[in-house]
Structure formats: structure tokens, C-alpha cells
Length: 152
Length: 225
Image (cartoon, rainbow over all chains, first blue to last red):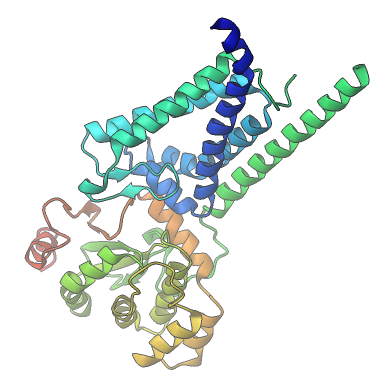
């Protein structure tokens, strides 16, 4: 069992890198075309002071793109796995508090975002998805060495 | 072994450098392009103090701020229900009304906001505002609202001056729309339409956006009489 894991671990790491890195790259890429909307979706969480929410809305997509690219090419995998997991955890907390407070917003995870009709909210599926990606990040933190990575 | 390792390291550092460069340039560009710029051309009725909005009846009180996006379906709905009364308030100078045409729904929102600002310079803002909603496409950025279309739309409501035509076709106030967007972001406007009366937002849950009676009552409570 342990031997089998040792054999497959580098491949799992590769898949985890491509999964977490890919989703970060896509999520960031879909937002940079409309940063007004990106800032608006962060404000709609009603969690941060307006100035900080706007700053995050303009900056976060580029951070996501950077983290995604670095994970895909496979450098700083351990620390980026940890950062990625923390980022996903923050998203989970933000979405959960919006749900708990009864806000009607789209998570804005892949562009879009802002207020939506109450029946159009997708809190649970967004939270489960982000927990999945958080676990990929945790895995990468513990097993950063994988196939086709630039880090030796 | 040593030489190939250092080659790998060089490639690795080059890749890290390139990715970092993309991120830094992106961040700087995003922060700069989403700030208000004092160099943008602004319509005569616009002032920085009013969040770069288009001001009607500047001397009056109370103040009604209208945040909108010309491609927003809910804004059209608001216009159908409450626009007539709001235009009456403007015509009878019962309040200072400030329109903030936001542009988060895409490029045709920018062209429409520019055309509305051009109409404001011709003292035809209210009619253009209505005409835009009346000719809103069912979906966003369909290609319907081109500069030519918006010029014709202005002509159809009697704005025939060459200054309007060149204003629309040159996109004279396109950069101004970024200022409106930046100030609307600072004002924490997260959806459209959003209406403030003397800084107090209408109650969305209470139907003050979608019911003329409640809208009139809310305005009256804010001092419109």
C-alpha cells in the first residue's frame, strides 16, 4: 500500500498542481477582462472595508494568475500549495458568511459576481468545490515533489 | 551534472521572473486604470464633487443619486415604472438629480454612457436616457449599440448638432466613464439600479425600486414635494 503510494505520489502531485494551478489560472483569467465587476463582486460580500475590497478586486485576479502559472510549471510547489489552500479557505469562509447572513450574491469566483436573485445562489456547491481545491493545496504542501516540475 | 543543474536553475529563475513580471505589470495596470483621472474630458454638467455624475438642477435639494448601467435589464424596468415620475421631479426642479452611468456590463455600456454624456452637453440628457432604455437589446454587448446607432438614436429624438455627432463618434467621454466607475466603486454600489436620497439608499426588499407608489413615498420621505 505504502509502496504503491510512493510510486503514484509524484503523478498525484502533478495532477494536483495542474488542478489547483489550472483553476486559479482560469479564475484569474476570466476576471481580468472586467475588473469593475471583479471589484463589485468582492464588495458584494460586505466583508471588507470598501477601499480594501476594491483593491482586492483589482489585484486578486493577477495573484491568482501568478499562483496558477507557478503551480503549473512546478516551482515553489510546497509554499504555493499552502498559499493556495489558505486562499481557498478564505473563499470558503467568505461564501459561508454571505450564506449565513442571507446575502443573495454570486461567488464571483470565475468572473460575474455581485447580487443575484435569491433562487440563483449556489453557496453549497461553491463551498464544496473550494474545499476540494483546498485539499489539493494541502496535499501539495506535504508532497511537493512530482513529475514534470521545474523544482528538483 | 553540475552544468546541467545550473542550466535548469537558470531556466527556472527565468520562468519565475517572467511570471512575476506578468503579475506586477498586471497589478500596476489594473490599479492605475481603475482610478479617476483628472485629465479625462468631462461633460459640462459633471463635477468631481458629485462622483463625476451628470447633474440636473445643481442648486436644488434634496439630492437623488441614480446609479445605473444602460445595459442593465433591472434599470430598464425601473425606468418603465418610476422614470416618468423621476423625470417630472427633474422638470419641476423639485430635487437635484445626479446620474452615474456605470459600465460594468461591458463595452456597449461605455458607448451608451458616452452618448448620454454627449446628450447632456446638448441639454437633452433626460430624453436620451429614456431613448437608451427604450432601445436596450435583450442581451448584453450584442453589437446593437454602435457609435453609428447611437448617433442615429440621438437624431431620432432631435439632437442633430454636429457637436453631438462628433462627441459620440470620437468617444469624447469614454475616459470619463472610468471616473464614474471608480467613484461608484468607492460609493460601494454593488448592483444597478441603486438610488440614494440624500445619501440614504432606497429599500430594495421593501419594493421601493419596483413600485411607483412606494418610490414616490420614499422620495417624499426624503424631502421631494
